[in-house]
Amino acid sequence: HLTMPRPRHRRIFSVANQKGGVGKTTTTVNIGVALALSGLHVLVIDLDPQGNASTALGIERTSGTPSSYDVLLGELTAAEAIQTCPDAPRLGVIPATIDLAGAEIELVGMENRENRLKMAIEAIPAEYDYVLIDCPPSLGLLTVNAMTATQEVLIPIQCEYYALEGLGQLLRNIDLVKQHLNPGLLVSTILLTMYDSRTRLAEQVAAEVRSHFGDKVLTTNIPRSVKVSEAPGYSQSVMTYDPGSRGALSYLDAAREIAERGTKEIA
Ligand code: ADP
Ligand code: MG
Image (tube, rainbow, N blue to C red; front, side, top):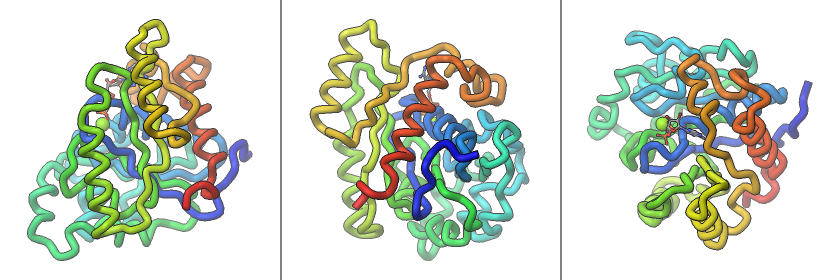
C-alpha cells in the first residue's frame, strides 16, 4: 500500500554532479528503492557506463543485455529494456552495459543528439510515477541528454573539502541546457551526503550549501555509514540490506521529503 503521496504528474529527475564519488549512484538507488517500497512506481535509468546503479539493484548488465545504450540509439523502446529489481517489484531499471562507454562519441554525429533520451522517455509505460536518471561523472552528451529529458535536477553534494568546487560550472551548464534545450529545467533538490556530524567541516559545508540554496536543500542529511557502502557489494540497496540502519532511515526520510514536496513547489 501507498505510504507516500503519488505525484499528479510523473516526475523525472536527473541525479547529476560532474564530480565523481559524491553519492549520485547511491542516492539514485536508495531514493528509488525507498519510493518503490512505499508503493510508488519508479524507473531508474542507469546512464553511467560503469553501471554501478544496475549492479547495486541486482540487475543483469552483461554485454548484449537490453540497455540504456539501445534506448538512446533508438534501437529498443524504453519498455523493451526495463528489468524489475528483485528486491522491489515496483522498481524498473534500464541498466547500463559497457556499450554505453562509446555512446558519448557515437552521439556526436547523430541527429537530435541532445534529444534522444527525451524522445525515448516519452514512450515510458504510464504506470511510472518517478523516473530517476543516474548520470555519469561528466558534463558530456550523456548528462546533456538526461537534463534535456527531465524537469528536475537532484544534486548530491558530499560534505567534504572541495565540495563546492565545480558546482558553479555545473550550474552554468544547467543554465545552458535551460536556455537552448529545455526551458523547464529546474534544480529542485539538493541532498547533502556522507555527512559526518562529528566534524566541523561537515557542519561548515552544510551551512554554506544551505545559505546558498535555501529550501532546495532537503532537511535530511545522509550520514556517512558503513552499511551504505557495503550494500552494493551484496547487489542491494541499503534499504533492503539493513532497513533499520541510519543510512536506510535517512534515505527513507529524504525520499519522503521529495515525495511530499510533490509538484506544487516546482514551477
Ligand atoms: P557517484 O555516483 O557520485 O560517483 P557513489 O554513489 O558511487 O558516487 O558513491 C561513491 C562511494 O562512496 C561509493 O563507494 C559509495 O558506496 C560510497 N558512499 C556513498 N554514500 C555513502 C554514505 N552515505 N556513507 C558511506 N559511504 C557512502
Ligand atoms: Mg555513480
